[in-house]
Structure formats: C-alpha cells, structure tokens
Image (spheres, rainbow, N blue to C red):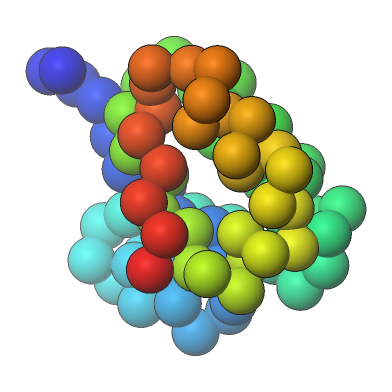
Length: 79
C-alpha cells in the first residue's frame, strides 16, 4: 500500500485538526456535502483510508455502508 494516503471527512474542527497533522480532508455539514466528499475521496487513486466522524457517516449511512461492502479500498474508519 505504498503511496496510499489518508483522507478525513467530518466537521470543521475535525477536518482542521487532521489538516494540521498533514491529512487532507473535507469539512461537511449536510448529507449532500458528505456524499460528495465520499465520492471525491473514493475516486482518488491514492486514497487508502478514509477517516470519517460518526456524525458525518450518519449523514450518508447508506453510501458509507455501500463502500464498505462493495470495495476493498479505501478502508473507512469511523471516529
């Protein structure tokens, strides 16, 4: 998994904190933004792990679960 990167999806504070640690991410506040951020992250060839807050995952539960069931990569970790 050399060259694969982490990507964070969550509220503004979480996304900012991960950016300070060198992890790219998206701040989301609604279902449409969350779904779009997930699609963008999954579409990246270098995305190996998506870190998503439980609140954000709840906004797009069907999409999160679908990615987990249908794809081997990226790994989705809910925090």
